[in-house]
Length: 309
Ligand SMILES: NC(=O)c1ccc[n+]([C@@H]2O[C@H](COP(=O)([O-])OP(=O)(O)OC[C@H]3O[C@@H](n4cnc5c(N)ncnc54)[C@H](OP(=O)(O)O)[C@@H]3O)[C@@H](O)[C@H]2O)c1
Image (cartoon, rainbow, N blue to C red; front, side):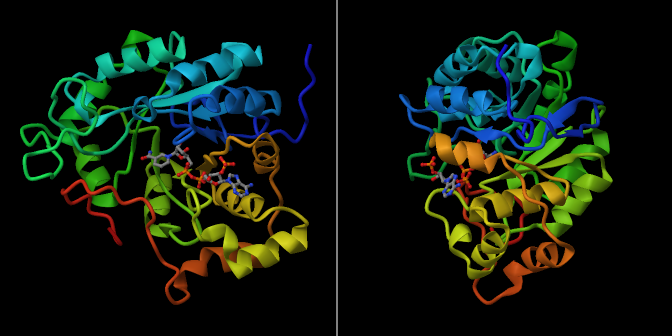
């Protein structure tokens, strides 16, 4: 039997509104290139991660599945999330089936609607465009109708929980008005430059787990270079990435750092205990001039009702 480090990120969990446990840190897989992602997933699971964040859109679920298999860890010990893309909003089960097939799994632990943006279907184009170059939105469909389709999925046994991603407070309010199932999670951009305190509190008050994507500020982002983040890291003799991941977990958020570098994958999973003052200083970092910013802003051409969009 393989021994896993006791401080591994897979050991600590939060509870979802379904009663299931979700490991507080999960490995992100967006932009993890073919030839790299299987090794990243295998190395994460071997270093103790039990949570992998995937999406059909990332185009690498095949390799993610290979990494899961190569880890040798039984399926029931893992928490796997995937997401339904805009072109599948009218046929979410078909989207789920494509992901399951690529991943080589019978079920996922969490299925999210990737964006509240239904897209028209044109062949296998992932982002169909109009003639003028704008994104081709399915205007006869709505995210609330997509949620109705999502609610049918737990009964199939192919998903343990359903949730959303990139939903703002007004969008969540609209969804909750008619929902039979409260989303288990809302995955959004969260880091010290975009803490979204209102959205996190709103989700927590409704039993929706906030999940932090781009927690390090995404590729080449400025968050890890921030002087305050670096000073806190120095005080704990750890990496800046560990500081921002630990800040997320300490505010009750599941955090999804992406890396294909085994040494970073390992350290990203090691949480540090931040003091009350350090938490406050990270909570308030965005208030400094020029810091408050959203880094992931696809040009959907629809109003997502987020501040700073
Ligand atoms: N739901 C959504 O719409 C959505 C949107 C964006 C992201 N996500 C999810 O959230 C995950 C994370 O977000 P992200 O990929 O945008 O960005 P991220 O995790 O904030 O940052 C990833 C970048 O940081 C680097 N990195 C990782 N660990 C580091 C460390 N310890 N020190 C310095 N640099 C480090 C990585 O490089 P290396 O890989 O080269 O090590 C990569 O360039 C995604 O992979 C995806 O699963 C979801």
